[in-house]
Image (cartoon, rainbow over all chains, first blue to last red):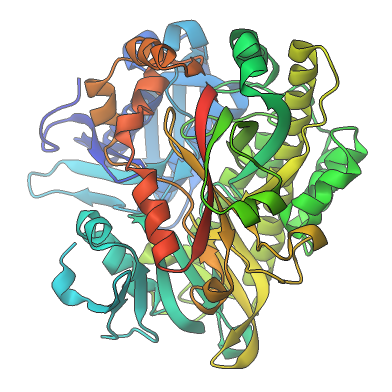
Length: 145
Length: 477
């Protein structure tokens, strides 16, 4: 489940008029990115319903740490859209301005997943990637659905 | 919204006075009730757009405006290339050329009622909708290029529809100036299997009853009478437009510094019209407009096929009109008596050209452009017409829909999809959707009242009410 406060490792959604915000918090920046990706999946379906059966490799690059987060979400959205898949497990590694990740999931099963909506793309609205006072990392932005 | 920061110019016109780096004022058209319910972010975003280089006259917001990214949704802004004006990916939105197409059916309510369930099932089977759905055609890269340059005209060439459909589509169904080479491999890949699909979220195909006529003279010209059955299709440029939007948004955000544009907010990412990036975006965005027009054309063809099957005879289903509400278009407008060529951004705003506009087909010239306003699932939609007065304000633009009143999360907690479908069926409205969670998130109660938005558009002089449409069948993604 989503944590009540962003100061704990985990993910949550935050409200935006027409769209939805995704927020991940982790001990490292990579973990915050992984948590935010869980928030992304749960816009579409219940994460528990997605089996981690198939692994996909994803990479992204941007010299701006915040835009790297946007690139990460956009790469996931691209894979979800073109492979018609949903993902439930993420392992992210970030070296300088490069991100590489393994993600696990399965093809969309409309009956079982009841996918609510497809995601169009990540926006720069409410975009933040930062280390908080307590030393934990936060990564968030609004995504267009 | 805190109204004390605004000057009320008129009952339905609110000015955001110039302050800070604003180059022009902001203007919001809405009733006092709509203004009070509007998010303060609309004021902030409308004012931010007014700070962009080359903006002309004012930064406008329509009665259904709400918090967008960079530009408000329901925002209209025109830029002069000669004055260093800009083009903005955020000013168009991700779903490039999302819009509404309305078809006459020639079927009456009695006949429709007899076939309502088979029609709902036929449309649901015949038109791919929802997450993970694919179209019946897969485009090669060469075919994709032709589609991106040809729009609905390309689709008709492939056998999807009739040549006379084109006159009832903005730009005659083919956006000029498209540059398919500006569309990335990834955007093409995302579209490969998505031609002729509805998508999800607030996109739909509805069979509707013309329940009320407000302006008989214009309704006659539009060929609609009370009791008519029409079909409305609401969708856009699918994965291709989304990918173009995301790619150019990031590129513009990272290039703003190079162009010496000081952005009040990074998400206002833009590029000068007269820059290689600005031109590349325009070429890609126009290709996405063609993709949306081709997509709605293919869905029209599929709809005609289903109607012919269900009613057992060939039905023409001619177009009333096809409008796009996420665009940037080059148009001529009179500004302070001077004719100017402007790049008009409409994000969640419908073009609403007045009578006698040269871009209108001859038979609609006396009426003005049909303006198609989509409601939410289970609620009314409207047909409006552009007005002469509207051409003087907001560059001939009007509202586009209702806008959400609550988040998807709140809606999902409040409603249950299956129960909504049953309740609406009890009211004579048949919903067909692959996802009950999707239905709950799109509950009628999760949206604002579109009627008050349309009334405000009329009272502000943006457009004139012509007819009200009530849903009978709704296919949701």
